[in-house]
Length: 209
Image (cartoon, rainbow, N blue to C red; front, side, top):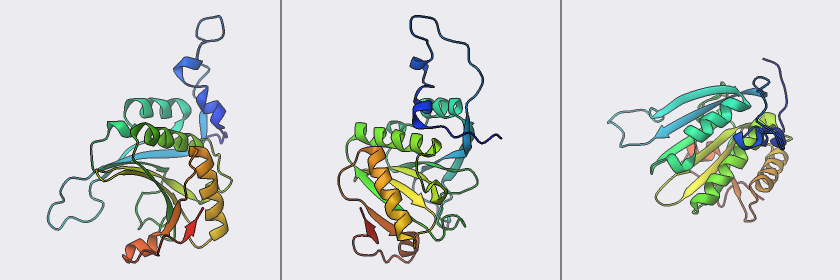
């Protein structure tokens, strides 16, 4: 697979509305637009677990893609948070990385979390983050694992997972960039997966931007 970096502007221009040239008919497709890497969508519909069921048994891999066209098709048809019922998650992670604390890429990491109680804003922030990830807009992109959209009765939230929680400088840069991407002005906090595993979250999170 050729490694072709796709900026956000390139992603945006692949929408159906942009397919037509000014004053003329839609142009013939020139072939798929390859992304820099493969990404995988996951989903987790959390019903009442069966007795003895291990955590994560409801987590399902949905589709791995590596083109702009596949991304838009999947997003438009399936992976909008507005299509989720309560108590469910969508995930977009780098191919080969499972959205679990136990995954080697995630084991020593953590997450930035953004709460959102407005559906329209939530869906827009999710889409902007997806485009930033597949478009490789983060300088520290190699430290990013993926993004989770969680729909809950008590409030929706986004969580951006990263690899090396102990590297404060990298995590702070990622957090600041993410806030710019989603146009978010309130403070956000970073928590270590290890703290969550031990059920001992640090007061207010480890880092704040």
